[in-house]
Image (tube, rainbow, N blue to C red; front, side, top):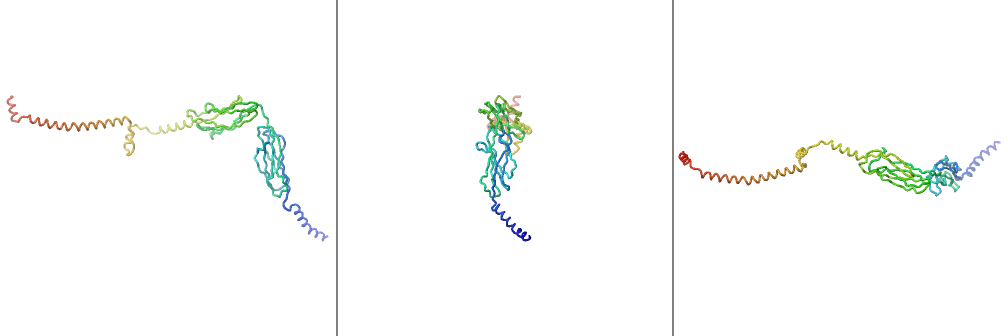
Length: 324
């Protein structure tokens, strides 16, 4: 009995080692991948549950995505390292057959299965109403939900035609020009992005104005706050002007004349007075240069004549006696 036990103990390690080599001599595996959904037919905007399946355990990466019937990817490729349920919610304009696909990107064994991709086809039904509609998706304004003059406002909006065709218009009433779009195809959803330019017109008052969309004999309105910044700038400019003390013209000239090298402002009337004064001074000088020498000459001549006509003192006395 003891011999049998010893033989078993000696043989068992050899059997175990042989089994390891037979099962996984080079880390081979046969990994099979597949994909499934919770059902086969969905309504548009209904959540689709996606189930990735793999036949072996270990470390792996599975890539999965969704394509439409034209082969266009409508859900970006994503990687996962687990088999937890994933989801996708379609938002289609028309009914379509979608393909949910996956691929075994990597695994930590030497996979002998060359088929590493799988797919599942489903149908998504889009119900189309005969009633048209308009909707504003977003209006891009500043942090204070307003826009200033000379700025552009971005507006995203949708329109569904139903069994109608129509002309769609968008504008800010009494502020911007009207932009139009032709909705010429029935049972079609249109997506638009327009830019409305606010005029640089300082006569526009700061106030709330009305954005209007119109089509299918329907109107959609939204309030828009427009800020007249140029009015504020004018107020600031006036305030700065009023804060400067007023100086009379004479004071300005007086102050300026005391500063060497500074230009002195003079009005046209004052310049005329100064020019007249200079002319009068010049005329006076010229006149004095002419009159003074002449007066001097005439004075000498008169003096000489007066002297020659005067009688001697004795003769004057005699003459006086004679008259008496």
